[in-house]
Each structure stands twice: as C-alpha cells, then as structure tokens.
Length: 161
Image (cartoon, rainbow, N blue to C red; front, top):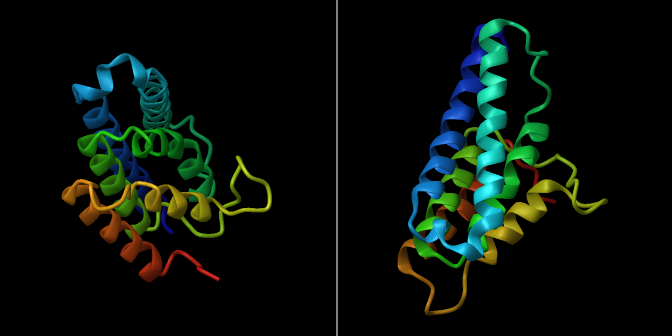
C-alpha cells in the first residue's frame, strides 16, 4: 500500500472510531454512574486517536503497524458499550464494529490480548452475539447484530475456521 493510501486508510478508520465513540459519549444513558468505565474507555481511546493523528500530521509517527494491533487497542470501548444494555449505545457500537470489519480495519488473525490462544475476532463475534438478550431485544439492536455477523462471516479480511 502506498504511503498516501495508508494515511487515508488510517484517517478513515480514525473517523469511524472517533465518531462512534463521540456518539456513545453523547448518549444520555452513557452519562449515568453505572457507565463510568465505558466513559473512561471512550475518552482514553479518543485521546489516543487524537495523539496518533497529530503525530501523523507532524510526521513523527512510526509507520503504521498491522491493523489488528490498533483494532485491539480500540476494541474495549465497543465491548463495554455492547455490555451496556442501552439499545442506542449497543446499536452505535455494533454499527461501528460492522464498518471496521467491512473495511478490513479488524482482521481475523489478530491474537486476543485478553485471552491467550484465542483470536480477537473470536471475542468480537462473542461480544456481538451477547448483545442478543432474547425476544425482548430491541429491534434496532437485532438488525445491527445480523448486519455485523453477516459482515464478519462474508468478509474477505477475516478467516473463520
């Protein structure tokens, strides 16, 4: 990939992630006390993205490493958002995960830093599936679950054994 294309790729990924994190933080439900860890995780990820983009503009950033390292780094806020039980927050998180998978920003070969021997995609698919809480699950969340799972199993960037 050419340097200009790689830089555009990084900006696109940052845009998806930043917008989703900002949307999650803006949700009224996310401001409630039980979601303190989610708010902190979102803010840390946004700060890291901002720092990374500034370094790229200044030309001091190291060449981008494999996408999975960055995806792993930014997955925690989306995992916590999916566990929030708030339909709007869960829906936003699933939408962003689906886009990151669709555009190849999350790959299937990434090791999961939280569970040795597993791949990150295993944890992502598990997180997506755990959003389904039975027939009472919000219809918008159900639609996002289906979209995310369909993207994961049909993505050329992910290997499902």
